[in-house]
Image 1 (cartoon, rainbow, N blue to C red):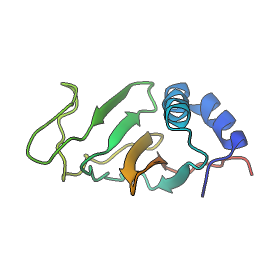
Image 2: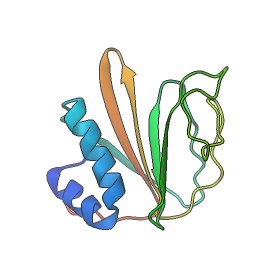
Image 3: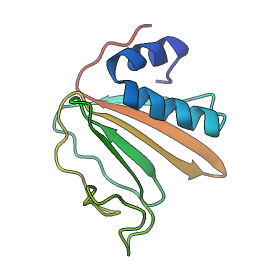
Length: 121
């Protein structure tokens, strides 16, 4: 599913930091389509090489990183102890994941929500 303007307004109410990250990518890369998926509670996210990824927890905390290469921790903040090619620990319900990467010369943005969510039609 692709996010619409109505979906983005709802996300702004639910998690302002995730919305701000989405809008930053949308503006910077002039994106028209943003993919969206929901995942079950306890979802473990695989971290791929070249991703720009941010996690927005239900308690308001967030962290982000550029996953550079598998052989180095790259441009990661100190509180982000995960490496390329690894999985995160199980994520709690209410977590938003905003990730983007280059594919065939185009920047693709994906938003994932851990848990059940009802976005407006």
